[in-house]
Length: 208
Image (cartoon, rainbow, N blue to C red; front, side):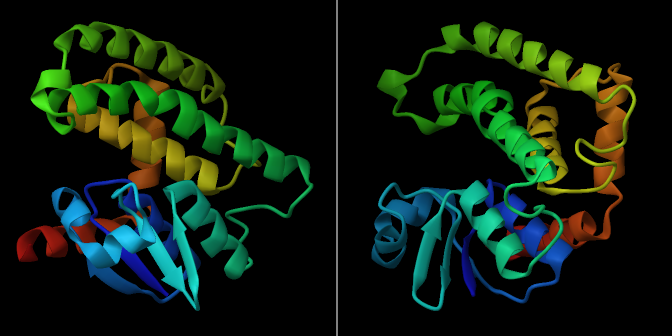
């Protein structure tokens, strides 16, 4: 199994998942700005975005799809069995992370440094912060009486949501006074899988 990506992108979720489930993988580092000039990568993902995965003829992109595949391949309880209430809850939080919590950050980032300059506008920044604050208020309320999002144990739901929150912290979006959120993030950063992924990220950044 080979994973194409860079740790400072959504690829981090994929590497973290691999470390959590203990699956070996070949790492193919690629800078996000170089993907569209890499013909091999563009065959894997015509959108030119990382991460992407190849495994025995399978070509897959989108971090949630890749992480779901890895968990099912390894029969990991990070993703509960199909058709169970626990699986439905984990998928609920995966969709929330990707469709609600992450989107204000992604829109902001695109207008700051991704889109061509002629298409950027800083007028979106205040609405992005407003929307993110609303979504974190929902999350904070639900974390008030629990350590994890589903079944009192670590799942892909926690991994995805916490990764988005870490992205938000790096952008200066996080309210450090929100104890429910900051405590949740601290628990996630203490996991050995997270630490191993951070070590990989440091190594990659030093080599590229």
